[in-house]
Amino acid sequence: MGGGNDNFINSGVLDPNNSIDGGDGTDIFTLQGTEARSFDQNIISFETIDKNGTGSWDLTGAITGADNINEGVLYISGTIDAPISFASDATLGVAGKDSIGTLNYTGDFTLGSGTLIVDLDNAGADLITITGNADISGGKLLVNPFMAEEEEFDNGWTQQILSATALTGEFAEVNSTSALF
Ligand SMILES: [Ca+2]
Ligand SMILES: [Ca+2]
Image (cartoon, rainbow, N blue to C red; front, top):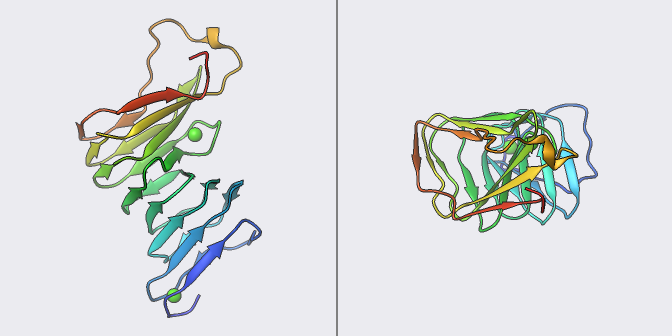
């Protein structure tokens, strides 16, 4: 992209072999659509990433911009040092669906009325580590157990899903994608 203010819209057809670089200016990378999509390239020098549409996007490359989850699900892995904002019921996932991983978030994290989805199997769970304060008051937690058998869990089994310097509030709702758990 050039030096101007660019808005790059990815509806899922695009599958580049290289990083996408917004260049100078104030650049927006928009993810949209109703399908489950992934994007494996680095998204560089975009000041904002907008996640629109009811579908899910799984970003596996490095990203730098502030993330506005306006609708649907955005999966991120690796390290984020820009703000994440949530529309009501918009969802953040860690390191892809049905896959255990870690998201390292630098700064204070505010879930607002958004949702955090956490994958879980008998070996572990997604983890989000936050260097600052985590404010989860009013937010929702959606647990996604994806192992085959419910009885793989022992009674009383616990798993850390979030670490932060300080924690404010508690989840307004905790739900599961599985009727078994
Ligand atoms: Ca630009
Ligand atoms: Ca995951």
